[in-house]
Image (cartoon, rainbow, N blue to C red; front, side, top):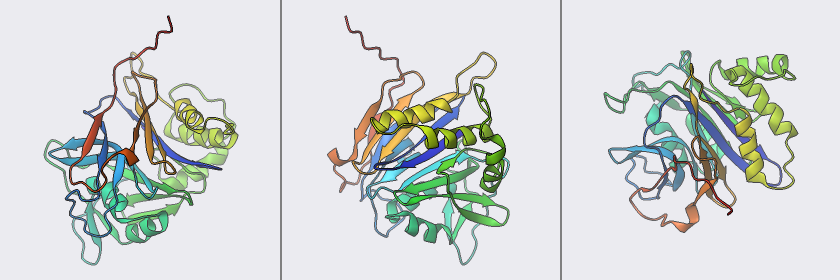
Length: 286
């Protein structure tokens, strides 16, 4: 279960929670402009959380140097992938985030490209089958949702700037009015997390520390590991498109860590990778 959020007033911030009962060796990866993707046009640098496997960044979420953000969220009941289809831009699910982020400078370009896309039922490898996902895209102008369903890849304008897992996005909007105002318990359902994140966005005080407040929204819809249910918020991320800084916290380490994209060589060819900090790191004041 996951939650993605975009926020904008004086500043724009994008991010997500990744909620799972396991994780791989995730890292904050900076993929420079000349990394050898198969995608040839434009080639913008990307920063985000990825599992780098066989030299390829399997992005969970990321932001490009132009400030376009993307995140993949679990969509197990509704996602439908297809074989290659003539007349479409065919792309594997694991390629979709880097494909959009490396070739589109803004949300308008992303919408245009996604409207021509066909998401393939292609596994990365036998041990890593295609994960059923839907996707959240955002920049300073707004956000959209892309959902691969039986009728193809549907693109929706996202007026609330929030996405969780099932059900499909139109149903989330339909449910929103029914759930808003609810007294929320711990470890919320997907529909409850959607409604609570919208409520928190609308009511949080963003006059001071934007990044801290953004993490507070994500924390409010996070998951705590229980004896019977081991799913937890593995990490939370916050991408700042103005300064090109990617912040994150992990379940084990509540301190905010950050990677500054501008400090890297964005004209290189190799992935720059910073392992996420999953160990507790307590600051003693005496």
